[in-house]
Image 1: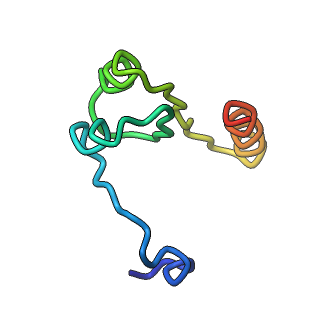
Image 2: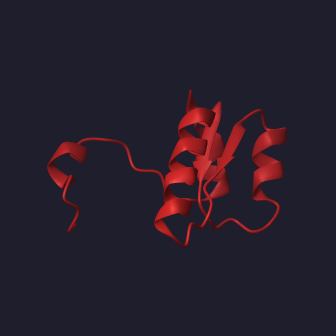
Amino acid sequence: RYSYLRAEAAGLAQVRPRTDEVLALQPTLVVRSYGGGPGIAGLLERAGARVVQLGYPETLADVRREVLRVGTELG
């Protein structure tokens, strides 16, 4: 409720980060950072979704590399 983009997000569907709710949407791509346990990426991939795992950058240089990597992954 404190998001800077709260107004822009109004009306967009929200999905809790639960495997069953995500899979019910039949995604072709899932971008994730954490949660779901260590096996969730494999489960999502077996269900047909490509998984892009966000890293955990610690420095500004790491952030730059991660943004470029994820951008490349997303095309």
